[in-house]
Amino acid sequence: MRASGPATSAPSLDTVVDHLRRARAVCVLTGAGVSAESGIPTFRGGDGLWDRYDPAELASEAGFRRDPRLVWEWYAFRQRAIASARPNAAHETIAAMERHYPRFTLVTQNVDGLHQRAGNAKVVELHGSIWRTRCTRDGTVAAISEPLTSVPPMCRCGALLRPDVTWFGEPLDRTALETAMSAASGADVLLVVGTSSAVYPAAALPGLTRKAGGKVIELNLEPTPLSAIADASRFGEAGTLLPSIWSRIENPKGL
Ligand code: OAD
Image (cartoon, rainbow, N blue to C red):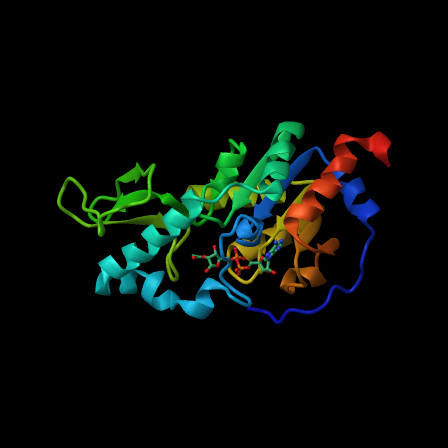
């Protein structure tokens, strides 16, 4: 992970609006910060999940092998929190963006499914979904509609089921990663929302956009390692920033 530094320049909100208005192909990359205002905790920073829980214990294959019940209890706890949360204004704005742009891809590192609940149909889930299980024997994936009440769940074949998410040390789903890389490379604008830009390969996507000549815009509470290379960074809550930017695109006469 690179050290984070302050943004070197602060292009105006007009510049951000202008990039998004001219764009035909848009890719949005989201992280845990986009769900923070729905009450879902982020991983890093004050009060982040990794301050309170050990990722080696709860988000690794070795941890799961050691104690599948403990890992599933944590996932079932998170499923309950997510099930009682609602998409926020940031999710809703990103759903409106999908309806607006002829070429649009949403790539998320989130496993919570809140983008789909807000109305996004085309979601590339880079780190999987908390709402799916995967058989540890043959890899069969199945959807879950409710938080699990009995853990650890077992497959019909008798093997343990695991959450269909990417854990530390595991490769990302190849199709999801290739779709994300192609969308980032082909984007006129990559809008990066609520991610610490600390976890690869997701954190490498903005580099692909810039290399291909597209613009990178970052929205975050605070500067991240991406801020130094983004074409524009705006700092604040995604649920406030995104609707205020988007209202100027949907309603240009309001300028
Ligand atoms: P992090 O928890 O690392 O970062 C969340 C980011 O959101 C931080 O940069 C915050 O400043 C920002 N943020 C918080 N609240 C916000 C708000 N209301 N509006 C805008 N920004 C806000 O989450 P990710 O970057 O998503 O992976 O983490 C990436 C991956 O690391 C996760 O998918 C997860 C984690 O370990 C796995 O579990 C494999």
